[in-house]
Length: 329
View 1 (cartoon, rainbow, N blue to C red):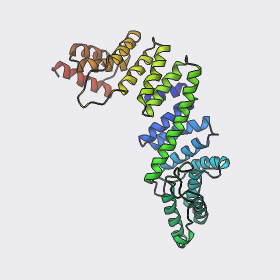
View 2 (cartoon, rainbow, N blue to C red):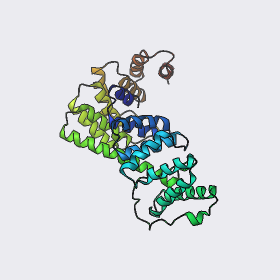
View 3 (cartoon, helix red, strand yellow):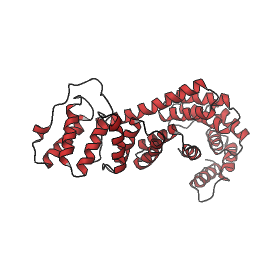
View 4 (cartoon, rainbow, N blue to C red):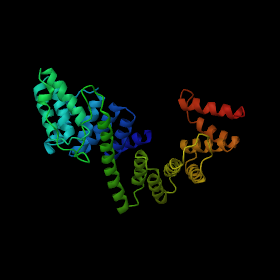
């Protein structure tokens, strides 16, 4: 993520990069950071209604269930193009409710309920909101809650998953994640198509490798990294990305094992080009330690620790490793 943020600082017009960063932060529960990343994406492509909706919903999550003005504008932008979008309709009504216009919110939620399939994941949350608004207005919830449409096998659109409390419903949360993944996958597919047309784009292959890594598709990440390596075998960062992609394909083991030769070969090539490469020094030192080559591990980590200050957490970690090697550990 640090590398992605550094690249975005150099190329702030990288729409896909902001989307990937936003999704990564969202999966970590860092909603404020996710909203900030998506804000950059919206600035680059404000016409994308799915992106606007996702940005608005992330803002709500970052504000503990309250709909800020910036989110209202995002949902209004969606509704201007897609008046039936259920997520935008849900949150636009929630904004009205939080502003004190409970009757308008109730009317909007009731209209959405009447037009939603019975098995849509947002229906349970929507029903709760209608009940809350009805009680606040001294109405009988049963009389003002319309019946939804017949059930469908698949929901018709994006999901409104956030309740008044700010806690997403389980079904809505799952569908929200699916919606985000689908959007990211669409962007990744578009990038892959561009690279098929222009396979000389090294940065594009690296970006694609990272994207597949975020999506949990290590085999595709490795193939993209291999393409980057074919185009730029002399670049240390390309070799490191390739080595990491190789490691992502390996099964997890409770007992540490040496790195696969395919990864260590790439890391050695990285050091030939860039002798001070931090990633290569760390991983090759780790491989040497796990293979019993303690002097080699100490040599790699000795070069690495020299690049940090004693106040850096990396320095403390490396010093502990080096001390353990000296002690025979």
